[in-house]
Image: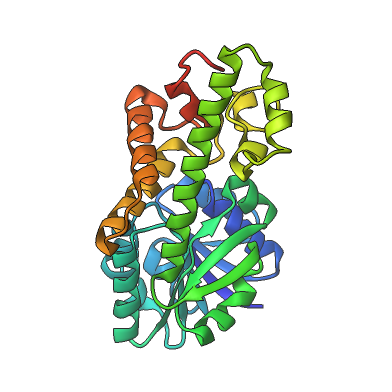
Length: 296
């Protein structure tokens, strides 16, 4: 079993860290929230006073923070790269922009360390149940060394290519998820306004060509799926403001690559309006409120 420094214990990270402990690994943990640190420490982790301390004398460092600027802050400004011992493998599971991911690979390599960008998909439920998908960018040898650690938190561990390629795959996935959720909301609202029962709509579409993971697992209209956020006050789940963050990352990447993403752009605009209406902390499936504000 490995010694791991885990930095970033938010809605996802705290469950990921606890699953690593359950898998038998030894953890030192740090987060800006002392409450979150205490929560994970109750499961057997050692609380660290700083990110640099969490990265000291461990074999792996895992980070799960909100945005690219936070990743830079943790690894460079907070001294994680400087504090890590030779041979430590650095794994970032945040969803960030491709340029920052590649810059962190370069900073780690310059200091003599191996780095893996390994964003995840699966949401809070996947983090709780250790069924996350990890999309990994970096050299194959580093990926293979990190695989046993990632397997303690996820079910699907995929090597996507070189530096930053994990982030590329993640933002492509989330752009599709957002578009799927938005069109599912449009279809369900339209069908109900035309007089069809929402459960009938759901049952038919989920066995027809309009089916999607977004509809089947996180149906945006309340009722058809009792476990969906929509049937539980749109409690996240994956917050709408985080979906907007990922959509904006997709549009930055599209512009950089010269790729045309008209549906991605439309979803980005829709989620921006939705967040401006004060719904950022609701589940991303709450985008249906943009079409039917009183739904719930």
